[in-house]
Image (cartoon, rainbow, N blue to C red; front, side):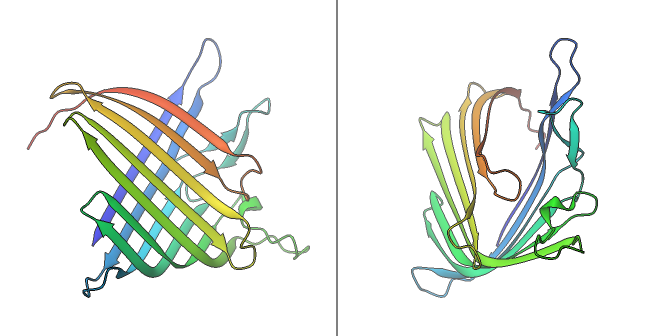
Length: 208
């Protein structure tokens, strides 16, 4: 059994400009797998992705709001087989059903073939693959790579891609530094590949 919950929200302001949202996502993932003595284990997984607050297109002046909390929300359920090597490499692939829910911003859910209707819900079935790699060097440096792929049976040549890399350096017991690069290609959001890079310097403190 594996669970992961992440929520990240970030804003920046340069000069006299307005605040720009740089990070805006809630991510939840839960995976149930069973060891049956094979090289691969059967699993059932579910994950949820949604913005925390309003998202904007800053290429327009004034910025145009294009998303909000649970608008849209992506919920994916999949079943298949997973493979793991000593907590370092983990990969799973299976058949998945992706549910997209929207309220005001229905460009993510609308079916262009139904001219008179603008749907709030979109259901897609296809294949999902998630691969993770965790490497550790000299007890102070770690590299985490995660790649998620999803394609529908209707358009098997079009893949949603989420490729994330995080290089972290633990400078001391309380200070750490990391560099993160996120690459996203999702056709229903943009025909272009989206790339985000960020560097962070943080202070950590353990209570227990």
